[in-house]
Image 1 (cartoon, one colour):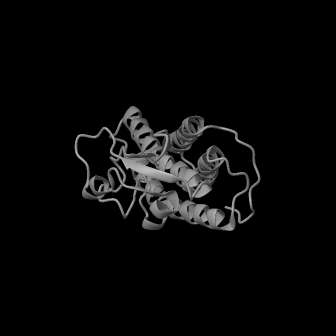
Image 2 (cartoon, rainbow, N blue to C red):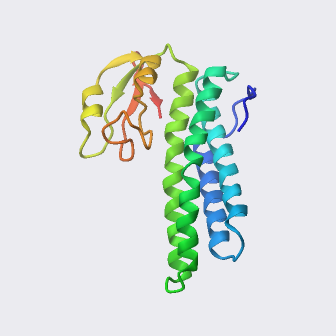
Length: 206
């Protein structure tokens, strides 16, 4: 992580960031599961991938909002969110170590577990991208719209059709599809909601 203010031009879109991120996470876990080396090497690679993936996802949202230079507030949020995610890595690799040492489990099953973990971790980038875009244009008015899931949590149902500046949604902690959310009753894990421009109806988030 870095406290430097990042200057950038629009680069990778969120889909390409997510694809690269998922591939890297899987590769690092797969390499570890097929090795006999210390956990430190691959765990550190995983941590660096989180730092890079979260940074590029946030920047993709920030750039899509038309902003050009990260503010100190945005950088602080990003650094904090990266730290939160990295806190999950040590327990993950403890589980991978136990999985690697279990000789009764076929390698194919171990690699499938790595793929599932990579996909789950990659889902968190949607919320990071959304936060970047919302922080990049905080005064834009947005309207919450329910997604395609069959059941919606109480929070999302309450927000449906409500219009506020994006800064209001940020302040309340209502970020669509933010996995691990403590402010959405669904936790963001199965959220498919979005925020649309209050005037044009164009999708803003995610």
